[in-house]
Length: 224
Image (tube, rainbow, N blue to C red; front, side, top):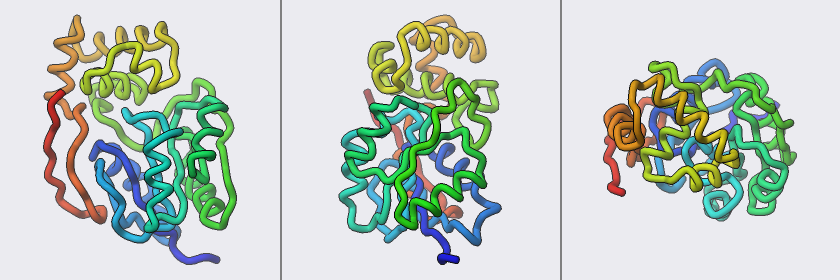
């Protein structure tokens, strides 16, 4: 049995990285979360950097390349619900060792991370329209689904519908549908009010660096 897997979680949102860390809390014998990384480089030696794509650029390009080039990181794994065979293959070409679905149970995620640590390359099966139910995301307490929250996060960051479609690999019609359902749930009628709501409810990326699950982050926002 290999030793404990050292894991860095990479995402710009504190709630996302902490939610994923909490999801793994029953597997401390298998996985030690040594870095919760909000938008800065991984500085500790880790076996795997788990790149969560919530409200981030797609996991197939520059971000993956930069992580793969970091000598402190053994393997890069993209953790996503954006499934497209070309994107998954591009992620591997750019240095990822895995492309894993957010619909995996915690147990299945740990098993796949262990296999990747041992040298395998893994792409999860396309989950289709399966809902994300584990982990955490901003707005969950308001009834937003993970997809709706991601779209609102991208709106709050200033992206247009076309840009959101490009990042998420969804159709424009799907984006508009998520926006309508999101607006209903948060009680707004237009994009300007949605952005204001998003700013007030944690939908701007955190600019904190956190080491270890008990670290106290300081958050700042950037202007668009």
